[in-house]
Length: 203
Image (tube, rainbow, N blue to C red; front, side, top):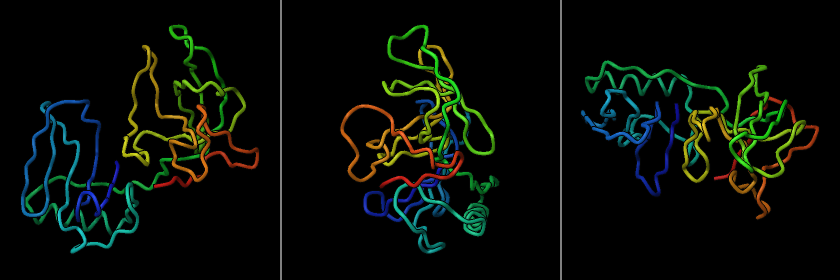
């Protein structure tokens, strides 16, 4: 689940993205200051909370983190507007330090690699990566499913050339880090980086 707030460009509206819309046509049902977004196959993929600063105080710009109390307030707003749905707090870090356990060439590509990346809690994600410097043994930054990149792109499970991919291995430029090199390639972290730790991205 992605919470996004950008008052300068969107206004005083909290965007909540709960699922990948997969490019399907959407419909919106608004009640008071709450709008539910559904795809044509009936899935709820998001919510908009208008004039949100009247209910909660948000810090940050872009993808933001909400406390349990703030999520409870959103649920109260939804109920008061007449929606029966409920949101669940998600405190899992979406950008984390990962370790490349394996890296094999993609059979149907001359530049893609299929990697197994250890992330937080001993979890391992299969990620297809096109960076020329990807290799076994690196420590890298992983955008897990449910992450919103600094440019607004959302990360969902997907497929590249017929191979499932669960996240993205990031470059410094994609993370909008200061003085990011312009050359193509993922960010290589030092040995001191701790696998599973949250990684702070730019805005």
